[in-house]
Image 1 (spheres, rainbow, N blue to C red):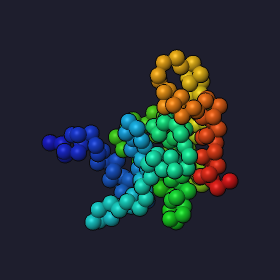
Image 2 (tube, one colour; image 1 turned 90 degrees about the vertical axis):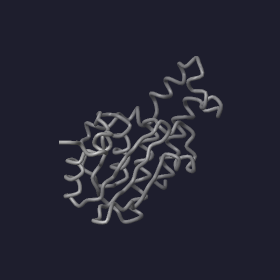
Image 3 (cartoon, rainbow, N blue to C red; image 1 turned 135 degrees about the horizontal axis):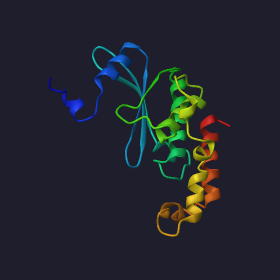
Image 4 (cartoon, rainbow, N blue to C red; image 1 turned 30 degrees about the vertical axis):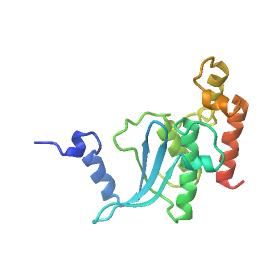
Length: 180
């Protein structure tokens, strides 16, 4: 039997997709690129999927976030923001869809899921998959910034973002998202 094109290209697992479509729940789809993460809320229809809401980590810049848009804290903040925006559009629950990515516990994909859960969005999950609070708050990145001797954290140095300011920046953005 020949494989379908999207399966051959490793883009779609049709067994998984059919199972999620049968549930008739909104899918919370997360995708990552080298610089950004994207979360979409998608509802299935016989005519085709309808994207109800799309957010990327670029949205965090508008809230004052100064760090990398592809790290664990940015993933968490994106999940938190996505959960709040979804609730504003009266989307209160869904199922998490990571597509063809390997489900690696404590990864940035699950940091985004933790953000969704912390926002009050209802999604089936396991607490064991979530990264630690130190990783979500950026303490591990601050440690590396302190130890870095080369240009690895050049963007942070260019913006005069010290390790302490980096952690504070994450907390400020989190407060803005939560409306505190």
